[in-house]
Image 1 (cartoon, rainbow, N blue to C red):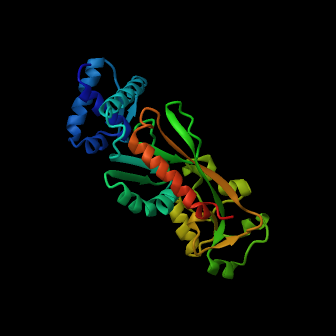
Image 2: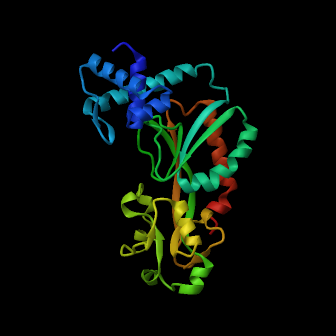
Image 3: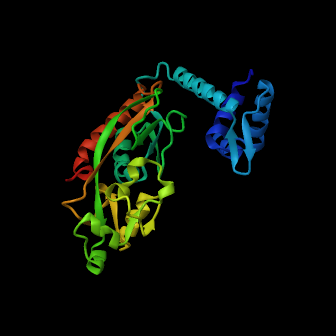
Length: 292
């Protein structure tokens, strides 16, 4: 193999899981992506992907090359940033949970941009997380503790969750007096087989027998269902404006957000600046994140 561009195309295809997705990321057409991958496979005398209607799946050889490609990409990025360690500019892509990203980070980003106009922020806020290890993002805010040795990780902040319902729902259905009563009410929660982190199994923590009447993979959708009178559900306190807390003396959960970056990029000025800003932000928003 003597064409690094082919390796770059391969890495993009492995990330996207399809030739079309890789083409969009790279700004080329899907046929070119296919030709580059075929050329790489021919040069290496190895099949790198299993191709199906669902897209591209890495073979064992492909998985090994993908890791090599990620390491090469990191080295090229680090080389490009030599001499730029103190330059606060460029683009940083952040992956954050849907609720935290939308309710806490997004409203604060305009003020941050005014302070750092040369720093462009891309916020991926949705159910599930993208990975700094796979170079899908530069920084991730996750619920689970990052364990990959290639990541530099630290706690960002604790936050609280509680049971909430709309006032009109409680007026209509009454209010539970104990956790054991919850099974008699409409409950709102996650779709069980779409839960992407064990820390999200709130109802199961309260009572393994509890099942939601209305469910969604989106915490923002759950918040809207609860606000519309759909039932009682666990929400982060920072998403519960306008709702009534249920069983306030009996239910209060605590979770932790972690912040991680790839070790080879963690000391760049742009990531250090963003990390410091995020730490200051959660201290400033402490009353919203953990009000009880």
